[in-house]
Image (cartoon, rainbow, N blue to C red; front, side):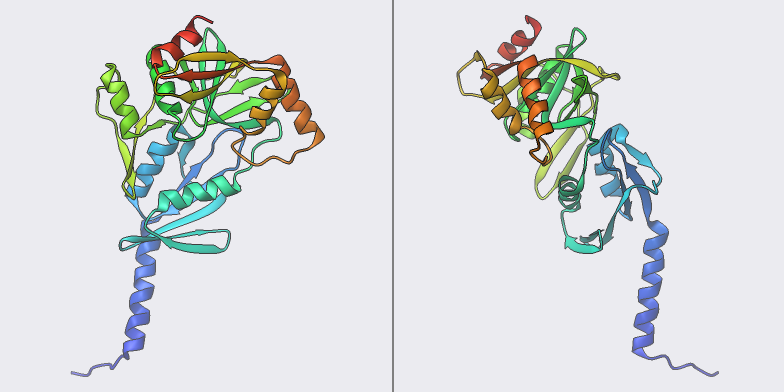
Length: 291
């Protein structure tokens, strides 16, 4: 019987080609399409990453591709991922963090909206905004207010129509940290088990409220919130103070043009804004519910 002698180099090339075909066969494509913003296509061979993306984006994650979306590749190889975007590729053990960074850096919003970082809830047909930095307790407060019957508009990215000042719903799942979840459970809410995503020791529980708002609502009030150890207070704000705080609130970088300043000035003049300092979640709820 005759044998064909194959070099080690040829064997390696064959195995690499076979591995590449295996990866390609197991790749799945999803589209992430939030309202009034950049659309993304994500291509990955990792089911666990897809599960985490579904928990993160909820209804805005769609099966299949979108030819107009910006492409992100997240290929798992062993314990690491190769995340590619815009002709560049990075190796990481935290693909969600890498994808979040791509979104933060490259997402652009429709010119008709102003995108702010905060939560928005509905009460009696009007939108109430809660603006604060990350780790300020914003999500815990929003989840508590929703559990009391307020409608859910968004928990992270507030989209305000510039002409009408209506707030557009962006109902992604809320993402609660362990401490916030314990606070809510201590008050008798969210006792059930919640799905979670975990990366680098950072666990976030996904909570999708049932009472989601489906249509844009008129803006009623804006609260700049601060969680405290013992103080509960509500302080009105002057126009200059409101404008300065609104300048610090965008979720993306805006060019400081005359048109942009005029929009923020008008928003400050026509909207009641308050500094809400709270230690007690019930105090914050009463501020909204009692007008």
